[in-house]
Amino acid sequence: MRKSVWTMVIATILIITASSCCTPDVHYEPVELAKPAEPFLPAIKADDTACLSRATFAAFVARERLYKNYAEECIAIIDANNLGIPKDAQ
Image 1: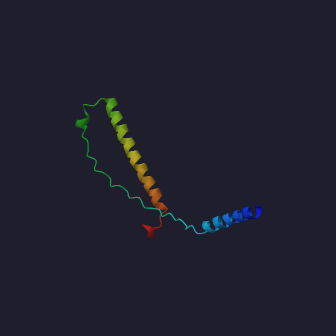
Image 2: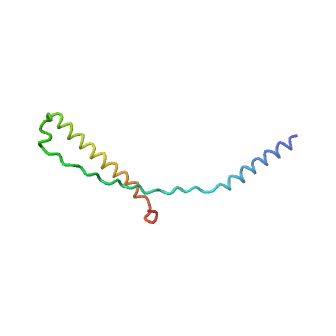
Image 3: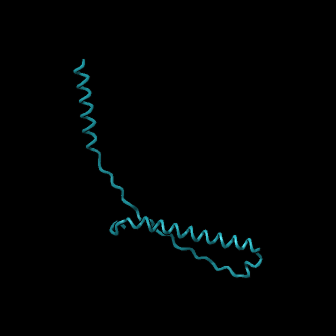
C-alpha cells in the first residue's frame, strides 16, 4: 500500500514538472498611443464677457486654465508611454 502511494506521488510530481515546461513564453508588445488632434477653440470677444461679474469671469478663466493643464498632462502621459516603444514597432 505504501509503495503505491509513493508511486502516485512521484508520478504526480513528474507530470506537473513535465507540463510546466511546455507553457509558451508570453511577450507583451507595447502599443503606441495616438495623440488626439487639438480642437479649434473659437476666440471669445471682450464684449461677450462684459455681462459676467468679476467672480464669474475669474471662475471662467480658472476653469479654462485647468482644462488646458489637464490636456497638457494627458499629452505628456501619451508621450511618456510612446518613449519606451522601439521605432521599428511603430
